Length: 233
Image (cartoon, rainbow, N blue to C red):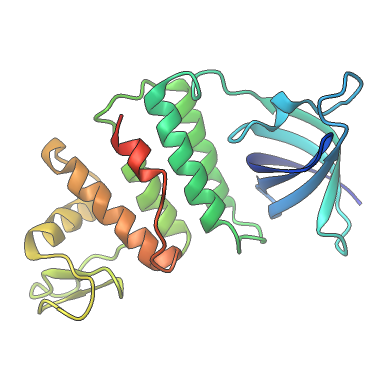
C-alpha cells in the first residue's frame, strides 16, 4: 500500500557502495527503516542531501506490513542550512541525534506529540539564534521525558523535599541507596517543573540533572558520548 508521511531522518547505515538503510522517525508510523538503492547516482531520485540526519522529509512509500525494510517512491525535504555550519548548533544536533537514536528504538507506533516536539526543536535550532546560554536543550529533554511517559512530577506533600532520580518520585528523607538529589538540587528542579523558568546560575546544574534522569529512566543508565562535545561549546 502506498502511504504518505512526514519524517525526520535519524540515521543512515551503509549497506553497500551504492545503497543504505535509512532510519526515519515518522509522524504517523513511528520509526521506520527504508532501503535506498542507487544513492549518489546521477539518475537517482533520492540524493544524499535528502538524507542528512535531522532533515525533515515528505515521503510517499510502499508500506508492506510483512517487510521491515520499506521502499521510498517519492521524496522531498525541508533542508537544513545552519545547523551544521555553527559549532554550538552542530554540537546540540549531535546530542539530539544520539538521544533519538537510543530513545526511539521501541517507538514503532504513532506518537504525534513526540514527533511534533522533535519537529519543533529542529525548526527552532535551524531558524533561531543559538547562544551558549540557550535553554533549548533543557526544554527538549524535559518535554521528551514527558512525552515518553517519564515526566517529572511535582511533590504532593510539603515534606517531600528530595527527588529520587532512580524512581522518579519525591521523598521526605534522603535515600542513600538510590540516586537522589540533595535538597537544593531538588528545589531547583521543582521550581523549573512548576514555572518553566531557569535562573542562569542554575543552567548547568539543571541540565546535568535532566540528563541523569533521562539516562536512568530511558537508557538504563547508559552514558551519552555527545555530552562532552556539547559541554565544550
